[in-house]
Image (cartoon, rainbow, N blue to C red; front, side, top):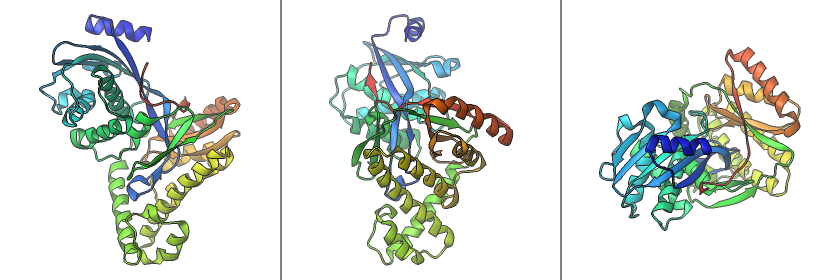
Length: 385
């Protein structure tokens, strides 16, 4: 923080007045379920984005990010809130300001802000949603706005969809705005009904491993999987009165799966149904303190994503298979869209160093380049420091 305070003074010529933090997030289970009417199971983590802020008396915003120092200070005013390619990363906070104004919130001046994040970019841990929710909490505090965390998450999603132009769901913003220390969130992305579920890690930690593979396929395959699930749903709807695959129990699915004419679509729908049921089992097991059972659900989730949904790829499968072989591993799976990005593992604290060393070496030998490892704990959501 001392370093950031000095940097703020250096960049903006005056001391910062306030400090804020917004976490990143990891999804512990429930992948590719959100658009199938199911639940997700994310938690906020202790890596994230710091913001130091000073309110201004004019309508100007000056934004600087330590992560993109070579781009210098981005400047714009309250009267020019448009997506501008040359503003690069600053379009995220700019979009949030615009969405707040469009929602009727009163913002009547600008501010100077320094961002500094320790979430690895492009690792699928939601650095963009972290910046959005940091901006939201800054706006709420500086302008004394009456807005709750759920509304802030909704405006963050709007920023992605309408201002940035990415068709993403609400999970990231919701987990970051609503995170609670030592708890995951069971969230129904359609209704926004949610429940906090204790994740009690006394002797364990969460280890996130980044494959360092660029997720080139993720977008095209995402659209393909979505279409396959929509088609499977339409076939089931010829007999069943359902709106989404997530409404089905395993028994209902098994009794009616022959309505789905293609074996591939059957596998896709099976993943959506079974994975959603895993999120409900996860809630039950963690609430009862059964971490070992939760670990088994994580493993089953990965197998389903690998075999039925086919969104993993050699890098993710290698990291997970290596994790499963290590002593002290409770469970391991891919997290995020797939085809690269990260795995999440729960590992006994006294085995973490060996885990990172053994998995890291074997991954590099097999894949040809290194993975990166991050130890994370389950943290609170966006807040003023």
